[in-house]
Length: 200
Image 1 (cartoon, rainbow, N blue to C red):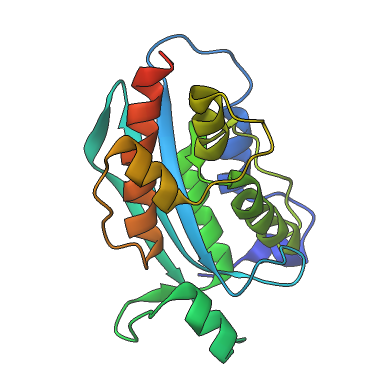
Image 2 (cartoon, rainbow, N blue to C red; image 1 turned 180 degrees about the vertical axis):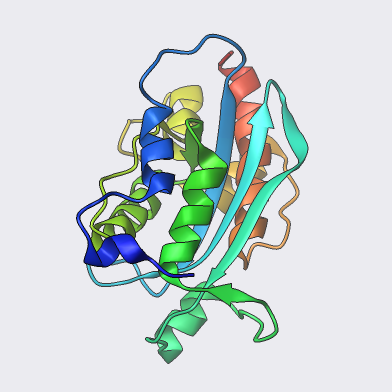
């Protein structure tokens, strides 16, 4: 795919379409997108996204067939980044970073984004968008760690790994070494916390 806007002054149509979704307040059932990313590290200024997994939730259920899984080509690969991200199979189709961001924005639309310790993942996306001379993600955010603290009555800045939430909520962990597997597990955690906290 050619990204002509990178050499011109006009913003790309996909970005215009994305931004336009936030122009009006919409009524109706909320769509949540639960997502996770595998990255080359934990420094959002220096590291990059390797893969994205995302799942749509409406009401109190995961939407069957409403998911995204993207593997992103990267020139920088170190033994540390491979260890942190798990094994990414060579046969999986990979796209360039710009195409990965387009797919992600087209999937999330104006949904509420949910993740576990979500700020790092969002900053990774924002840095990728910055490299494309675009703005920041506009979606509202929810963090399962924050929801868990609220349910348990813990301090707001208390940090708990996703595995701890699974144990507390009696959720069986599934494929915890991929972005999609982590997104699915986080979706199950979110649905339980959503019911316990009576979130619409």
